[in-house]
Image (cartoon, rainbow, N blue to C red):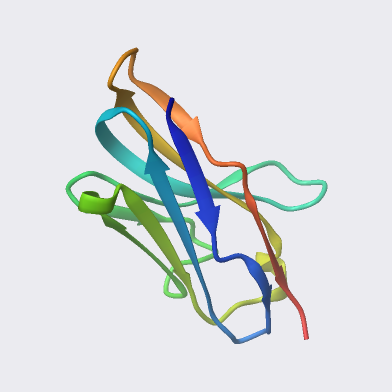
Length: 120
């Protein structure tokens, strides 16, 4: 059974930093793209950043220059370094992974989400 578990959310101050982590565990054959999405109250879930297995990254315009996505393939873990936080970054952050489990078909898996609140 494949699980994605996020950590590192919490309260951050405007202008401050937080770092999220997401570890994929279980019977995994291969992981392709990993990413972070977020959903603020009353809004649709949106893509924040993505990273391919080869390390190519992409970002939403709203976080370019402030957030950095990275991954450790040996640990099946993806990170999101969030700097220069703004109140509008407040949301539940979800990681996802496009992967093939040891048994089963290639699918998109999601973590349970971690709350990030930016407030003074």
